[in-house]
Image 1 (cartoon, rainbow, N blue to C red):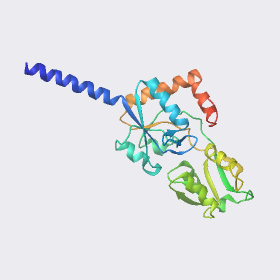
Image 2 (cartoon, rainbow, N blue to C red):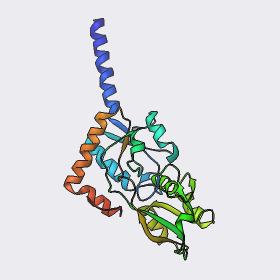
Image 3 (tube, rainbow, N blue to C red):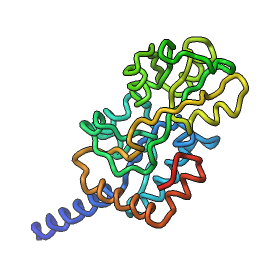
Image 4 (cartoon, rainbow, N blue to C red):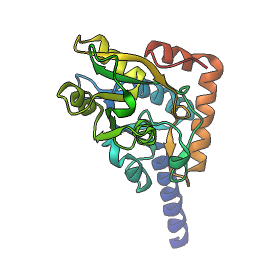
Length: 240
């Protein structure tokens, strides 16, 4: 009888572990519209929330969304605070040394420069350019030889231009276009930079089975056109 009870307990524990693994904690920043932001209800919203929910449905797992500051978003994935990163994160070789990526769910998104209105004659090579810490834009500015100033959030980079701490911001164009459209004091330069390999979902390198599930889900959305529909809805980059 004891062995039967132990066997039953072991099966129950195995079942509960399997169920627990079906709950995937989706980590995002919640501060980078239209990719991700916190709406008026205090909930994660945006392109990646809608996309992530659909990917979890197709992968047959349950999603739970959590937010994390950008500058520690990779370390906290690796340490197990959540299971994926969906935060407008471009696929780069340096990041791929630390975490795994799914296939991209956006095409490479052009980066743009935001400056004060009327400052379209700016010499970018000699300028002070703001970028969010740990982004492909920050690395690009450092390599181009301009003076880089880094900030923890995207909003702070825009504020730096408005208050005179920086001459320009370099960030994803899809983030900067609404900023420029909503006010008269800033404008976009007629110059884009194409950097990065598109945005993908980040996972721990050990989570190969989960990566396979999400890769298949992303591919299915590419195949049936639903991913392109979401990209168009949220006005993000080019279609597949």
